[in-house]
Image 1 (cartoon, rainbow, N blue to C red):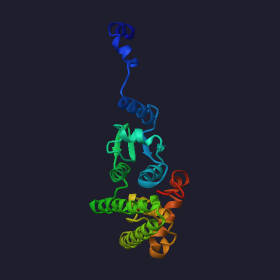
Image 2 (tube, rainbow, N blue to C red; image 1 turned 180 degrees about the vertical axis):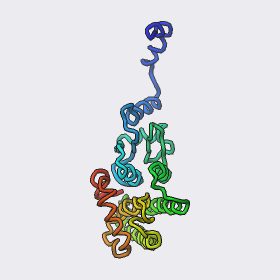
Image 3 (cartoon, rainbow, N blue to C red; image 1 turned 90 degrees about the horizontal axis):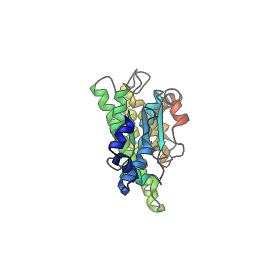
Length: 246
């Protein structure tokens, strides 16, 4: 049947040899790079750093989910950015069953609900989503510091970012005193809040090279140590970028 069909419509065969536009080449190239039939159910596409993908990676890793951690190089980024796979021209991108998800906070919320770590009620969901938003606040100022090339300006940005980090850290410590009646941030159950305070706040501290978080949030840092050694051990062993600038 296939041979008969190709004889009746030879144009189908010839069309593969036709010249294509640069835009089509970009799509073809990126599709081959990002989507393969043999790929695992989950793929995270991001640069070679923690940045806005660290929480999503940690959620998947903490549940022992096989996922492809696709590191995008600076060389490949322009093609990927212009492709239909990168809807808003930004990373990270999550693929789940070949469907594309973007925007880091939305990805974190999606994965939290998917793995049932988004809280037991509306108030807990609010707390977790609120924490996700604080990461964006902190990463925005921390990123400016990390990528600044001017020495004087960099020192100013580091102070601004550190002051903001300490403000948020102290407030989250007070919240934890209110919620942390059990072994975890929100009580007896491991949730995305535990991932955020460990990975999110930890990455900001690493960016700023701030080593004194325990002084300002001793209870929270004690929780983070426990989470690092248990639920997130695999993540820190295999997916966390140490000494990351972003």
